[in-house]
Image 1 (spheres, rainbow, N blue to C red):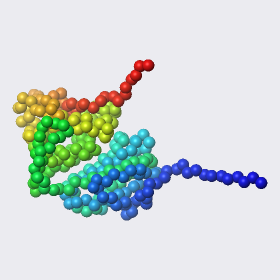
Image 2 (cartoon, rainbow, N blue to C red):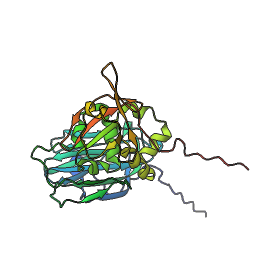
Image 3 (cartoon, helix red, strand yellow):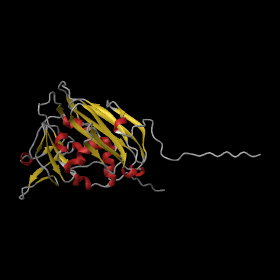
Image 4 (spheres, one colour):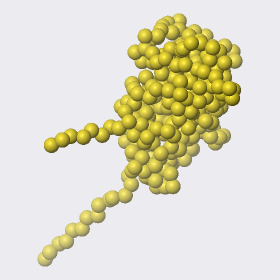
Length: 305
């Protein structure tokens, strides 16, 4: 006699080892110290929830990394009442969440597929708590400029991130800072002027430039690009900046601010948008073009046989 054995192979989506964390009530508890979780999986209509305990006055950031072409994932940050504090719904290979000056307690991170999309991903979560530290100098991304970090926070402290979060047209710049963790650095630098590329400036970049800008591979170049837009040792209103001969950026790039008869201001060849947005240690002016972007315009190389 002949015996026939049939086998069935499973080709569907396989949940990760943290299931069942499909709802807020069954969220996986993680410690943001920082924490990096690998090999996570979103299946169709199967959200992942994570619970974090945030210190009072702390800042929480979370980065979801994946390959967008294989499935579009999105993320949100919620409090215990289900109110969304931050959300990220880009078309890049990562989503990033950030919130600062938070009330101490439990918060939730939700990762989900757009329109039922499935994909594998990693999740990195970090938390920064307010502390009083000894004054020290810091070299920022190989810059020759040395600055003092803040030692105490004023009772009504307003961070650079707080200001950026209130200006919708600077949301891409705030997202860029949080992706690379550079918001924490700039939040603690005293007396800086930031010429922040607005969303229109980001829209002028090519897809390759955008991907490079947000990629960990090009983090050093991205920090240098950001530093080209930051002036140390002075909170200059746009009017005061226009009276100076030139300004030297952290990236050792020379900026010149000029006024036009129409009452607008130009930084090198970029027009300003939102101006004179003041934080405790910084002042922010939006610009409609990257002042100096050192990222590659193409990552393709050609060879001749």
